[in-house]
Each structure stands twice: as C-alpha cells, then as structure tokens.
Image: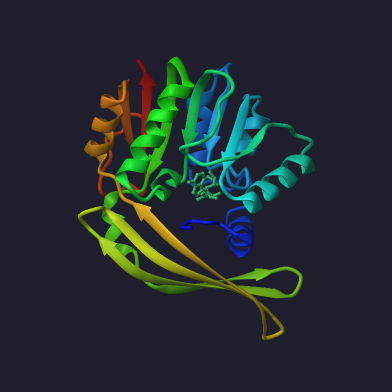
Length: 251
Ligand SMILES: C[S@@+](CC[C@H](N)C(=O)[O-])C[C@H]1O[C@@H](n2cnc3c(N)ncnc32)[C@H](O)[C@@H]1O
C-alpha cells in the first residue's frame, strides 16, 4: 500500500512537524473557520498538528486518517491537553460523517496522497455528499511546478533519547501524463551506530492543475470558488507561492 505512514514515518512526522507547528496554515484555517458553529471534519488528520489548535479555539472538529500510528500520536496529544474529539480510522473514500458538515479542511497537500484522478474525484464527491448545503470545502495543493523538484535525497532526525532516524528518499518515476510522482522512502532507526529497524514505504503524489481542480469542483456541485496563494485569502496564486488554497461552497 502507498503512503502508509507506518511506525517510523509517523515518528518522523511527529518530530519534524509537532502539534501547533505552522507553515502559515494554522493561522489561515483559524481565520477562515472563525465563527463556524457546526461540525468540521479534517480528513487525513495525522498527529493533530492542525486539529488541536482548531479545537483549542473552540471549534467542533473531528478527524479521520488511514494510519493507526498517526492517530495514536493524535490521541496522545489530545489527552496531554485534556481535549476530546472523535478520531476515525478511515480513508478519503470510505470515511463516515454521521452529521451534515459545516466545513471540511484538507491542509498540507494531503489530498495529493490520492494518487489517481479517479480517487481524487471519488473523495471530492464524498466531501460534497457529507457537507450541508452552503457548507465549505477548504483544501490546499502544492503548486504543480514542484513536480520537477521531486528528487532523491537523505534527511536525518534525532529520536530521543539516543536514536537517530534516517530517511532515504529515492525518486522512482515521474508520470507527467498522469501527473503522478512515485518515490521509495526507506526509514532507518539507529542507536549508537547499530541499525535497529528499517521500514520501506512507497510514496506517491498526484499533482493537480489549478483550473483542473476548479472544474472538478464545479462539476461536482461546488460554487463560489476562491483560489488563494500563500495563505492570503483572495490573493491570485503566483509562481512564487508555496501553497495554493481552494475554498468552495456546496451549492
Ligand atoms: C502530510 S500528513 C498531514 C497530517 C495533518 N493533516 C497535518 O496537516 O499535519 C498526511 C496524512 O494523510 C494520511 N493519509 C494518507 N493516505 C490517506 C488516505 N487515503 N486516506 C486518509 N488519510 C490518508 C496519512 O496517514 C497522514 O497522516
């Protein structure tokens, strides 16, 4: 299975992007969701990096994720702060929303982890079905230009108390027609120079065009679409923007 976020990948995410760490997205989502009284869902919620600040702001947010390891971190972070919410072990195309949602938020380019056009459309149509009329979908994309910069490389993290984690990412394929990149991620946990554990994960992303996603949203019954660059609501995206944010309303 691709994009598994198993034990070592989850630990790396937790170390690299701890709860509350913002790339401008935490503030952006807090501002865009201000005053939302109804239920909000964060698909691919991960360790709660965004979910927890939203809960702390008094918003009614639930989450789901396909990785039990990521959800375990999230649950622990919630307990540390005496926060409660519902976390569901589910994927983008089979999650259950037990009440009509006021908003769905998909930060951090997580939507691109669905690595085919068809799966992306299936997720968008499930989002549409789960929203109440007038409800909003807020979703981030990495700019498509980044497809060319996907390349092999190595990163390391200290894993307290004595460990070191290495990640060797090998770029395997760039399928420009399908707009999909595939990498092999090899995680290794070392202690005092001894290799304790290795995990391999296939990692793939689909790179959506801006107008492609706009048309898909329109065809699925979304309107009032606002596309913004660099977490500045309403600012037309430029090539220099590191992120492109969509906001669309269920008609
Ligand atoms: C980049 S992390 C984002 C976590 C969190 N939203 C944040 O902003 O920090 C991506 C998350 O997507 C989850 N994921 C990957 N494929 C998924 C799928 N098909 N359905 C649901 N979650 C998925 C991973 O397990 C991981 O927790």
